[in-house]
Image (tube, rainbow, N blue to C red; front, side, top):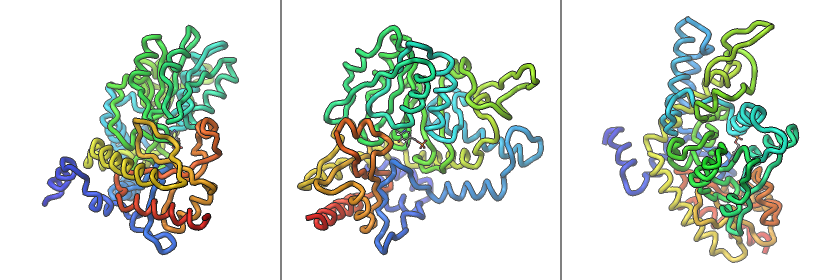
Length: 419
Ligand SMILES: *Cc1c(COP(=O)(O)O)cnc(C)c1O
């Protein structure tokens, strides 16, 4: 089979050829404490395939120079590759124009950009921002900083015991002072997939713009910002088989143009005098200073890699993994699943009776199983469930059913130690 035939077979087959995909990820061959690595911490960061690593090496060894300012060959090459990566991201999320794609250092940076660029310009005293209980701290704290500065107010959409947003409560929070909505597409702590499309439509009917935190959605499902009609969509490269230090803010051009810059410096200006500075056009207005050029190009390569698999195939395999893990872990006596929403993606949070999550993580590590334990930067979720922390297994398309079995065996081993 040729490479393209193989790719096509993977894309169109009923199931992914996971073993063959795993071979693309050198780190998955590691052993941890003599045991094969079972990497189930994908919600914190994903792993990079060889093609992305090679792309980074190729850039660094043959293409690196600063972008935008040079007329020499290397600078033009670097600029071309950097802008090509922007168009790759544009097509990945189906944005209308490449200037609606802003390179940031990550989801956190993207949300802070919106807070400074939009929030500080358009949100004032007495105004209200709607967030949800499911938000990551990076979609809470910037807004708290804003409301404190402005005398504005945050209102929070509650969740039910399954970890699903109460949509009637969301709708009741709107009033004439509502100026902004921030909502996560997928909860990183529980895996809940929120009905963002209808939430966006509801907000828009009241003239309120919506920012979607897509950090946990972009790696796991096809995202179409035009279909969603979101005003802003943020995600991180390192959760998407790409490098750290790069993220994306998608914003509708009309909004981005009305916003003020977040950071001032080089490249974001058209002209500077000490009397007056004229800002550059979007997206450059929001990309002050030397951007993470290599990381942006690496993210482009990561998206190219994902495209050979297809996001629908990714989502289908992860659905199978999650169903199997939910069944297997859920039937263990003394184990409680935290987050049992009808619509979930790739995340299994759980608590073991009588064992602190930190001990769960440490003991699973001895079996080679990497999970995350803690509050997952989502303390309001923990408070809602009256627990300090959970253990969280989070899946990627390169995980296998055998790795779910290893997780289950690991949990049994933990229970034996504490029996
Ligand atoms: C990881 C994550 C973030 C923060 O991403 P960074 O890459 O650390 O900036 C924000 N929101 C959600 C839902 C996340 O999972």
